[in-house]
Amino acid sequence: MFETFGFDTLTAPQAAIYFGLALGLAFGALAEVTRFCFRRGLIGPAAERRPALAVWLTALAVAILGTQGAVALGWIGFAEHRLLAPDLPWAAILLGGLLFGAGMVLTRGCASRLTVLAGSGNLRAALVLVVFALTAHATLKGVLAPLRQALGTLTLPLGEAAVLPAAWGVALALALLGWAVLSGARRAHLAGAAALGLLVPLGWVGTGFVLYDEFEPIALESLSFTAPAADTLFWTVASSAVPARFGVGLVGGVLIGAAALALLSGRFRWQSFETPAQTGRYLAGAVLMGFGGVLAGGCTVGAGLSGVPTLALSALLALAAIAAGGIGADRALSRLSGSSSGSAAPSATPQAPQRA
Image 1 (cartoon, rainbow, N blue to C red):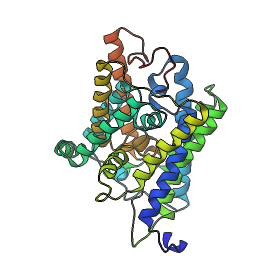
Image 2: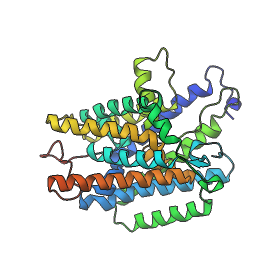
Image 3: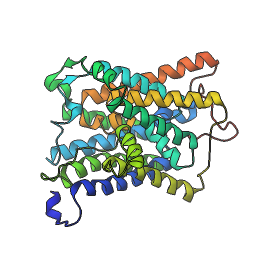
Image 4: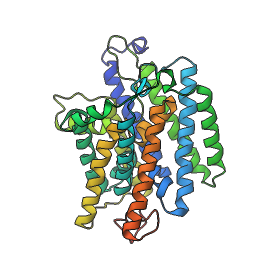
């Protein structure tokens, strides 16, 4: 479809960068104002847990409905997408999800939340993202790649069962929306979450339909942070040799969008580490998320918010493993520290509310 626009100086891959930037700006702004965070919905303070989960599930429900609507209209299809591969790499997904979940507890946020926090002045989050990106790249193409490939050989043949029926997806989305509306969460936050969820089908349709060009094809993708974080880091240090892609624009847009909203609202605040032990915990979490995110096929956004709407069993398994890893890590840390659930990883700024 892209060739019908008549662009003379802009190719589809170039347009994808600007498209990613626009999506990132919207995601960064909406995630900052709604405090969009999967971890808080699982193990955050008791008073925040239910509304935080309602925000996340609202976004997921809208993403499912929008994505499946686009599929029904024939705009996009996922038959050739890696998430719907007939052989399920169960070992990599389970291990990766558990590691990613544990890592997000140690760093007090998943990759998407930390990107938003980095834009809001959190230097802890910024450093974690660098280590996360380095580890993800090492897992994709570096010293950890052989281990990833070995785990990927352990598969379960599913065939057509690798994807759920569309009716099941619609039923799931409606159930999630119903629970969120009755959760007691603020309506303004739910509205913001719904707008955020619409970015997922917008990403799929934008890259898979609007920007489709048979002469210069681009990948079908939507919101994600694992591979895009690695791409952004290496494009930053080697832009003359590594071309920018959709993911680079996306990450850059999230940082700018979150920074703009934080500055306008007065929530921008420089934050950093307080102790060497805290630094070590955050860096260990970054490594676990980088390695685990690649094994699982994505983070809470890539495999969860964007992956689940494809109705792929691999995405559902990855999100479930991430949740299990996060809950398990929180309980283990709670037993070690003697604290209650949700407070095992102490805030870096005890005297002020933590927005991680």
